[in-house]
Length: 347
Image 1 (spheres, helix red, strand yellow):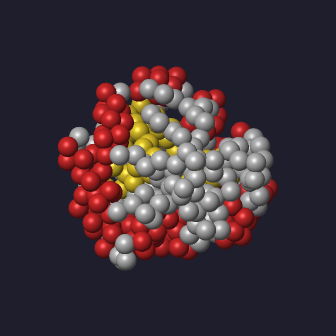
Image 2: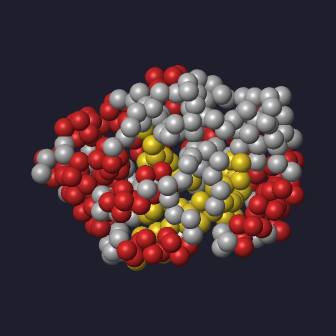
């Protein structure tokens, strides 16, 4: 085994330079083996988590114009929409009938929506329907605050009072400004993304973090991303889980490359080793499929991400119901448990 993996097995923190060396030189099987050992040392037993929620994309109007997104539309363009409160209620009630008690509220960056639009939705979902809500990516929050001449903390207090309980680490993709200038130059910079989430987490809105690979990123970009997330978690402790995704083809303007299962599992395992302060590592069954998902559970992951009842951005290769999720986990040799988006089961 690579000597740096022995360091991880001794629970010594890897430096960025060491992680880069592992990413470039170590065999994926060795990284997976070490990550699996670390996972079981930190989380003994065979429990594997899953959660159930519905994504509600409340608008597709967006001013950010990411090169990889086929979902967003410019204001005034044909096909734009803004969901009404009743449309959102209907989607949420349908989700409850299917066993979901959580909503992931996310949309394009639409500066024209009044602040009451968001607070009415949150109150309806949480107070009337009794659901919990994770919502609004960092760039959405920053743009909403700017549009309404609020500080970020002022906006967060308004949204929390209306029922928001979590903020996702969405819009991260690759936290390297070199890559962000290629993919989404109008989005937040890496530091702005990090600092926005830090404010959210310090103000009682924990969340998740992720990485998306499969374009022009280099190993150096990947390690920079992981290091930024680890530093955020050192500061806040508010990152409840981390998941690796892969880009999927959506537009003709966006260059993607095929990510092999071996490359994905190597990154997944390295995430477990490098992100030594994040308790839960999720394998993306949604994006990678069941076969890779099963391997991920012996490569450092302790969670299969989620059953998503509606997804307008990615083509799902994942699991579509509670029974299917639990059967998959049992079939992989583990014991399923249902958790919520904030992993309150850890408290």
